[in-house]
Amino acid sequence: MEEKATADIPESYFEYRAEFTVPMFGVWTLPNPLVSSLFLALKGWGIGLGDITWNKEPSSYNDFQITINVLKLNAQIKFGLDSTTFIATNPDWSGAKELMELFKAAMDVIQKAATAGISSQDVALAMHVRTGEKSSKQTMSAFVNADLLGPAQMYGISVYKEDSWFVVDKSVRYPDCFFVRLQRRHGASASFDDIARRLYEDELKVLQMLGLGNLLEG
Image (cartoon, rainbow, N blue to C red):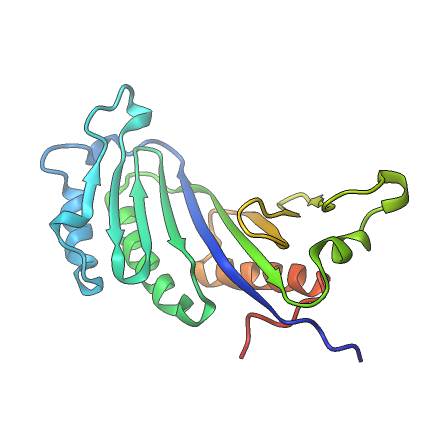
């Protein structure tokens, strides 16, 4: 069996977004009861008053947004009237459990405060992936008709399915790197555990397709 190349991920970005069935007008008062509840629920992750910011000059209801920075995990929690977004910069699967605990704790508070349920959940993972052996151009040449397309610095592909899609392209930030973005839409009833499992499977499938070693284990 051919040994797979090793690789590293110099930069990555995770985003989860939940859309609500109706806007949360009821919790946008001063003082904000949702912020108070989140502050108490997330104190165990080291957040302080200086980690909470908001859009001070919204031009419409769509611009209302409060952001909680969780420096310990390189993460952010953002919520507006109609959605909540969780972000993690350079996440690692070894720390996925604590990130999921953070996001679950925040979502429990938000859902208790909201008068509406979740209508949809979207998750995205973007990463720059560097391989130390075969060049990214050589790898991608196997997925396109290079003779038809002609010489190029790099070839890219995109695959769209009913509830998910992924793109493999040239990284503009790191030399001889892939840029990979995976995105999947989940229904309202999907749990964080289900979402994390599907994301793991999607990432593993794309990395294996690129002939890279199993970066998610070990």
